[in-house]
Amino acid sequence: MTNTQLPLPINYIADEWSECLLVPDAWNLDPNTGQPIHRAVTTGPDDVERALRHAERSYRVEHWDDAAKEERAAVIERAAAIIQTRIEDIARTDALTSGVPIAMARRIAEFLPYRMRSAAAELRVLPRRKALAAGGRDVRLYKVPWGPAAILTPWNGPSFIPAAKTVSALAAGCPVILKPSEHAPSSAQIIVECFIQAGLPNGALQLVHGAGDVGAVITGDNRVKIVAFTGGTNAGRAIARAAAEDFKVLQLELGGNNPALVLDDADIDVAADGILEGMTKLNGQWCEGPGKVLAHKKLVEPLVDALIDRISRIKIGHSLDENTQLGPISNAPHFATLRSRIEGLRSHGATIHQPAPLPAFEGFFLSPTVASGVDAAVATAELFGPLVSVHSVESNEEALRAANANPSGLDAYVFGSDLERAIDIGSRVLSGEVRVNGAKIADLGEDSAQSFWGTSGIGGHAPGESIRVFCGDRVVGVDSPDLPI
Image 1 (cartoon, rainbow, N blue to C red):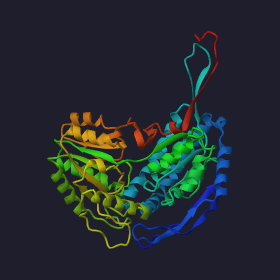
Image 2: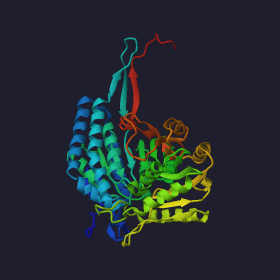
Image 3: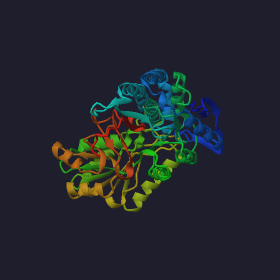
Image 4: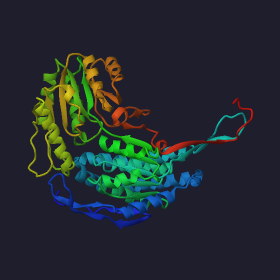
């Protein structure tokens, strides 16, 4: 835990590694101690332009025959094998940049090779072209990569999201420019190193660094044909506005204050366990975590008591400590945002409960927090941390109305003993996914499909659909005078 230095991030542009520019008087900090772990970096305008030119030159649709598809799948599998050898390196880097305890960071890192191999398997079975029924005429449907892809990833999933998004775009055949969050660039660096070592074709993948200014240049450039972004709603709106100029394809996974409905027949222990798991998983720093708890009035007091009891027994500690259950908030700006959210709820009359003892470190530590006794109508801001607000409702229908009054559109939760009724209520919540009596991350089923509703984004995700996001349909065939019109 004493050696928390990380290598200085570097760019990978036009098939070469190159130094980044240093941001004056700025450092990336260890969230456990507030001490520097490396200098803050960015990519200069000339290098960004060089990356865009190279991505445009590298787009070659005609190379996507079956042999090329198999070659790309083999490269992805080699990259997965290389990542397998660097699990501990990835886990440590994730823990140092996101604040997530290393035991959890390691479990996520161990899933990366599986995610990549599944993309290779999907690539092999995805038909690049297929014949269509056309009365004996030669008519074909092609799956064509859209073109250069900009992938912008957040600090809360520093290895998994860059790996998952990048492998999908690479499998589709899109030349990728990856820009990880300036708050957590080092894990994406490792992922790119593994891909390059595996022997990706020239131009298939480039890596640049920097803040929103770099992201804006890339996503606004007309040479980029598809943007995949995971992050905040305001940044997503800016990307969508810029993309409208040339109608880019967008996949935007944003955020919201995800509701949790605690119905009148809910088991208090089941609800408290589920809400606690959701608000502390990844230190609460995940876009699908619960935020606004809408509990039947008779259950509010026992639910708050149960949450306080559980929170008081959580071990908060250094993110590299194997025994830590909850680590620090990832970065200083978000730590300040969370404290501001808490004070905002307090100013509206909420009682703030923070029962967990904090460790003797100078980092960005926060007790899991329950804010109770405030009107649900004022609790609309995304929390994105170990924090929930609890609100009293008169009935299950009122809980549903309150949830849909300011819908997150991304995720929601329902707790109730009558599963048929809970699922029925869940089906009426305006969210892409609704979990009943739990708060896990893994997909609910093999054929799960989740759209991003409302302000939670554009597009969606589902097992088996990741590569298809980066492909467009093109039908080519022999016309006929016998067609009706």
